Length: 164
Length: 214
Image (cartoon, rainbow over all chains, first blue to last red):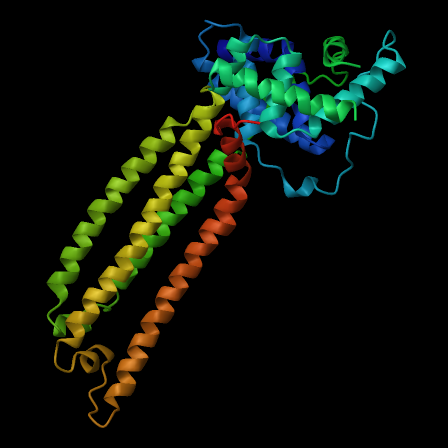
């Protein structure tokens, strides 16, 4: 029997799970790790869900908890070391109206992001998700000026990786 | 292709095909966390137990009997009372700092609070090591200033036994004991915390480093 809080959580989390999948794709290197990180984020979001007061959108609040889990809390399990790197296999995200060129560009983008460090990954992820600097600074706990400087450097680094 | 175009590609990426069902998500919430925070808590508690056990065992099982003969028992007892007060203070600090950790905080605050817990445990271990060294030095001075102190302590009262030889053995045993302590300390810090906090330390430095002039 699920409580009302559990029902609300499942409804909110299920609707926004795509955010979590994107974070898992940029912070892990194989499917087992992806699943482990997804599970850890689910646990952390659920553990803190009672603190979510609805002042912000659930998705905005979830970005913070999910990124915090990926950057600061997640421990890679040793059993995952030998599994296949999924940067070389096809994403299971193709749809009928999605052409091959875009698929290749998306894969190139993911591969490029994977070469960044954890903080740069978070900055670029929030940029790609169209988050304003004010929110990026607040999520990471740094000043807006600092966020802009770090973002410019991260973008430069990514540009060089994508267009060598 | 510039980043603005890549951003469009990102935004138009199809949704994850293998979506996790509500039931699977529900099952995941019942699983146990395997986060760094949990392991720091476990390792921290183990360190408290380890040092407490070392101290407790050294005063039990008749280990203090020879010291009674040397009339050093009140010194040892007072030293222990002082020690237990500090252990309680460290435990309160450990609990307080641990309860500050919240995944809802911003990334920098979260990392700072995790590292604060680790620092509390680090100071606790340093304190214990200093305690062992200071206690040993004071005790040695008191023993050497007591006539036949070493003989009473070792339980050997044979006068034909080489006194100088006894002093050497006594000192070597203590050096070996302190070396083992340092080895255990190294194990906890450079092996255990190294594994647990390497990524966190690196990320914290990256996030907090000043904007150096490029």
